[in-house]
Image (cartoon, rainbow, N blue to C red; front, side, top):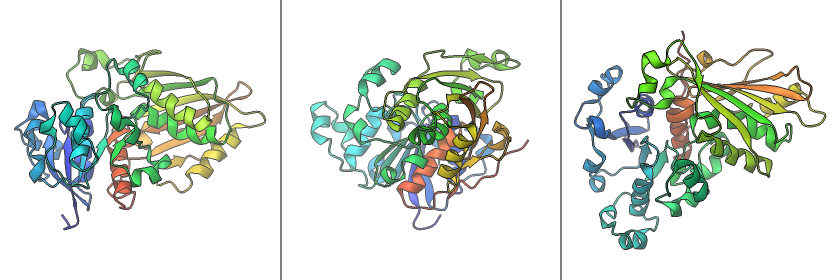
Length: 374
């Protein structure tokens, strides 16, 4: 590692997102992984947890409570913990770096969180803890009060292509969910340009099983998933308010979408088929041109040519998003198709993209990956 490398902690390193963070950051010239946590796998070497990463020279996994923050001189914390687990942790970390929560922590009896850490530390959260700006909306969809409400206004929603200026100065970056990434990337430019109407947006999305995480669940067993496809979270999936938050901001008015996710028998990938109503006088070709113009200089977003249809195999293992637009046979409507890898552009890759922007590195550093095929 170069002398200028930043010292990185990955929390939740035993999950799929954590493994992808390790795979990417292990070859990043400006990152040195010094802490890996995984409570259920604490004490085990990385190669035992992930044999495909055994050749890497990495620290063993430890429990979060074993991390000796004060002596590690950490620059950035990637949190790939389950939803709800990052809130108290971020509260403690950002206080220790001089972001002013001492009185609140002491009043709450949290003196143990007031150990010193380097002032430059940033938290990049891959979970949903800081994605929703409204605490009431968070409570409604996640079923409990937020434990770090005072941090929510400080968090930057880190869909990199739309938030670079904010990310550059942020200490807390909330990486978008995988489904929202696949939908928001094509829809935001179209709403900002008024090329489509903010009503009657239908998002039909399909994900590989890795999107459900690595925890042992009966619904994710091979026999439960193989040779079939099924919707879930119908009219109740937690990513719906996240999508609506971003689209409402872009449209300057409340936007409600119909969003239905489906589980398909593949390891990774998301394909979103999005049905939109065109603005008066607009055509599908106009809609596609808006996306071409918006993403022409983006390293990780490609608007495909002609009738080429985005597919998950085009982006598997990469930080890329492939998009195209097609005229619907129903007059006045268009079909937008978007494909990403849920573990990379939908999670770890986007987190590293935000890391690069936040610390002033070339945005594609460590992420110039070719798709895995077949």
